[in-house]
Length: 116
Image 1 (cartoon, rainbow, N blue to C red):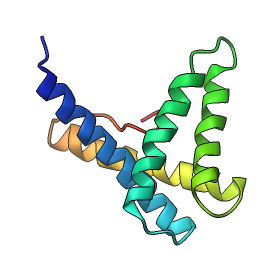
Image 2 (image 1 turned 60 degrees about the horizontal axis):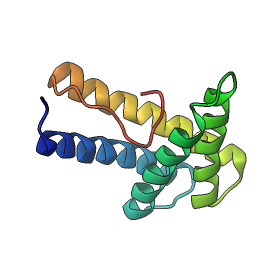
Image 3 (image 1 turned 45 degrees about the horizontal axis):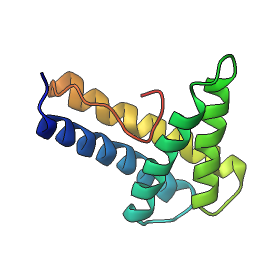
């Protein structure tokens, strides 16, 4: 059985990875450099994803739309900028997780960045 402390540490690390990915993506695309904004965006994006992804047939597409909507709502720019921030965040999270999981063998995920 996994202890609550291990679960909490995994959640914090995953939230940190997701927030860092969104922070880096947003700082490149929108020049917004607030880690606390990225942290809240990752958390709200994960909630939006969880609320919509279970819907049959269109859940994944609707969840992606909801996640990009959260980024669009939280950062300046339009839908295209939000989609670029989302793609950049996904790519950054992928690279971070590759290092953490393959090189260091940690086995963590990214909270707030779907599909990684």
